[in-house]
Length: 470
View 1 (cartoon, one colour):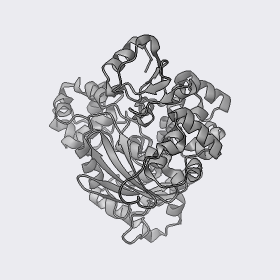
View 2 (cartoon, one colour; view 1 turned 180 degrees about the vertical axis):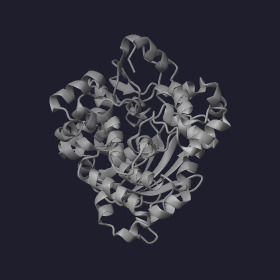
View 3 (cartoon, rainbow, N blue to C red; view 1 turned 45 degrees about the vertical axis):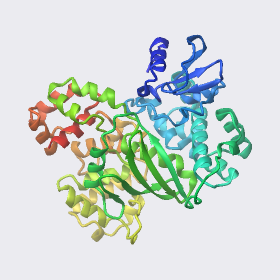
View 4 (cartoon, rainbow, N blue to C red; view 1 turned 45 degrees about the horizontal axis):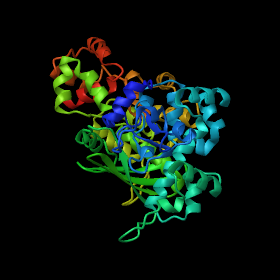
């Protein structure tokens, strides 16, 4: 979004929550930065500066408003749409790559020098990768301070800070208070060890029913559980495993995380947000789709339908390969055979190396499909195929289709749900064609694909709506 002063100021004056995460309002007379929807008195225009990121505002010397919590605003929906280097970098930073591998690791993943990457991010966001990661660390630290009984030194290193002094200085600069001042007296019983309760913000509307129905229908026994209100699953994270419970409510999604290592808080939150598509701009998406008279009624009836994505792109690729030519119920049964027995506990889906170690009889599928899954696991394990959120989407699709047994449908499905492409479309899918026919759209794949061109760049959202019609 281009930061046009008049447009931004009108959004602030009307307290328009749709712009939360798009930009941040810094007030020179108070030294505070806020979300556009902050309920405080609208500042005078001459005292306002607009920033494209929280990190940019912090770098300019502003501290976060304690009332509207701008550091906890939904992420910019721009990073889902954009497939360029800046968009890929932002998705990787939110997943904690800078904390784990540093700026050199981030630059290497993107194929650019550190200097050039810093220049691109600063030009777009007013801050380089270190400052962007620092802003995220501050938010992670605040969550841990407010929701756990961990010592402040433990929180400093769990949030990714290099020292307690760096932690103290950052918290003081960002929030205008020492870390201990953010820890409010807690009433009632002590929190469960390892459990973290938090609220995941989103831009309304959110059609929670469609999300829960979609995930429940495809839940893999042993990995996931879902009903009409809550989704639970095991996560494989950089430092260990975890479980999460996600319950959509008006205004936010309630999340209960149980982490084996608190250093995984940031990537766990990022993956949960990605799974439920919480950083989308549903008003913009619905407005674009409603311009097609065939979709207008469906959009009006169910506003805020999101694209259910994934917490693990390799897992999603395996699911796509297995589900190519069988029913959803049959695919769930086959997938459950790949999951190690965990008793009553949910277990993360096996990673590439674990899949490669499975004996032939564990797959329970034709040999050709088993060979495809092993080829997929080998490519991901060797680093020859990148399916992470920061991957080049076009290269990921090309890499998938080079594998034996992977065609356009499978690659497109992985692009949509695994890599996070908002503009993927599957015109040959039987459910899509049935949904199109129900709405009076052409059900011939070539004609339907041509009609779908008018839905760009939101064809993934149109696809979900067609599935619902089917």
